[in-house]
Structures are given as C-alpha cells and as structure tokens.
Length: 46
Image (cartoon, rainbow, N blue to C red; front, side, top):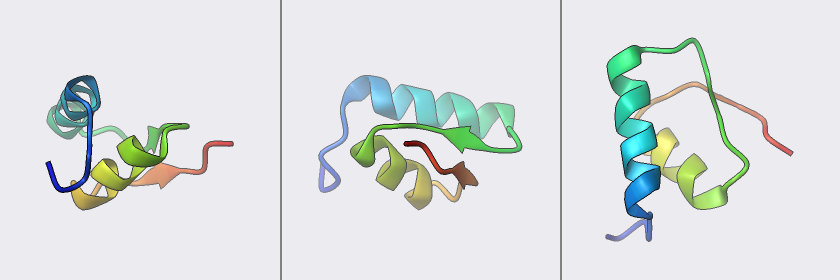
C-alpha cells in the first residue's frame, strides 16, 4: 500500500518472481518501483 501499486501490477511482479526471467520490462512508473523492490532486473522502458 505504501508504493501505491495496483493489484494487477502486484500479480505481474509476483508472476515474474516465480518465473525468474532475465529481465522485467514495464512502462509504468509504479510497477517499475514495485519490481525494483522485488529485486527484479528491469530494462528501460520508454
């Protein structure tokens, strides 16, 4: 709740954590912050 993330953003990041991808790509600032907190490697989105 402190990050202001949407439920679907949390589900996307949780799925990525389970699948262990090489990188996570997002164009959404809040989703990017959530992914950073989840220690995912994030590629720059424009």
